[in-house]
Structure formats: structure tokens, C-alpha cells
Image (cartoon, rainbow, N blue to C red; front, side):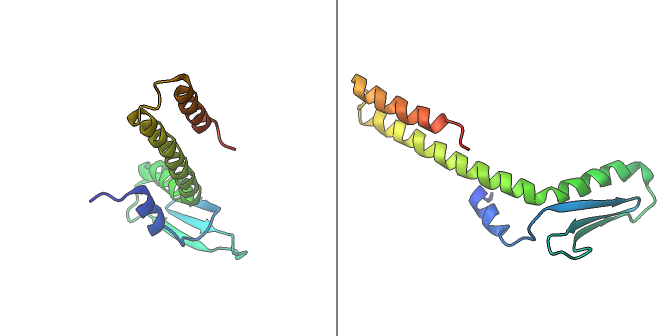
Length: 123
């Protein structure tokens, strides 16, 4: 079974708040959350088990991706809310169509107003 967005976000609740930063050193990359005011509050450590310098760029990218987790969580949360808002507006439009409330100009004006409002860029 695939997790819904809401289930995933609920499962992720309580993580160490950001910002996180990637401490990149050859052979060992740490993900640090410094919000606690501590010199180092290690969240994750990415290390090498073999001497493979050709893989360093990939490890650096992995560390940067992990360090972006709090920002990505915020973006996913915001997008889930936006999708829910737009879904609500579409459901209202479908309801108007199903009730044949669009047979007159007033029905179309109502539908247009809801659709237009739903598509406005939110602050």
C-alpha cells in the first residue's frame, strides 16, 4: 500500500527542525542542525567504507539532499495544502455542474468566481 501525502507528513512530524547544513569533508560528510546553539548537533553521517574518490561528488550531493530535508518537508506541506484548496474548488465546480446550476448566466458567474479565486496565487 502506498502512503498518502498526509500519512507521510504525519510520520515525519517531530523531526529535528532546520536549517540543516552539510559538513562536507573528503571521505566523511555530516549533516548538522545547529538550531540548538550547540557547536555540532549531528543529524546524520555519510561515510565511505572504501577508498572511492570517484564517488565523492555523489556523496556530496547525497549529503546536500539530506541537509535540505527540512526545507523539502516545508515545501511538501505547503503543496499538500495548496492541492487540498484547489481540490475543494474543483469539487464545488463539479457540484454546480451536477446540479445543473450552470444553465444560466448566474450559475456560470458563480462557477467562474470560485475557479478564478482558486487559481489566484496565494501569498
